Image (tube, rainbow, N blue to C red; front, side):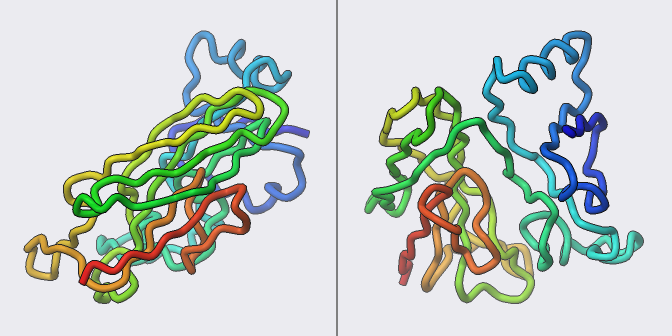
Length: 214
């Protein structure tokens, strides 16, 4: 069984997510949506979409609805285990990440080798997350610093360069001033978010580097 989800926001899927062979989120697909879904389900198109929101397991994992603070909300502040995280998405092929490096020009550029290790062509969305080790309590746990889409033939490997946003290695303090990060910072590079510790299950999903900004 494959479930096709339509709608405009995250849904609670924990009751059946582990019982089906696949989930396809099509949002509001429009007049050609049926044809597009069929192309994906029958393998004529290799999907490469990534979630722009977090799918939580339950509303009980979130703060009260009347609490407008960001703590505990969105991928940047959420402390729990999401059902499907921001940036998550699957493909009919697999990708491996190796040779990651952070440029020395004020840590402004990330480079990584991405290889399509599967048997068919596909797109990978390479994502870079910054995770400061010693951030204050009010700070987000992580944030998306750069991303790009790369199309790779089966067996193809390519070096991908991702310039970081100008404020990627800065943090807004509790009085609203933006300041450069200091100390040890993890930079995670992969096709999705790393786990809460900043790690990937294997190099097929991504790699994490440590840089010292002192």
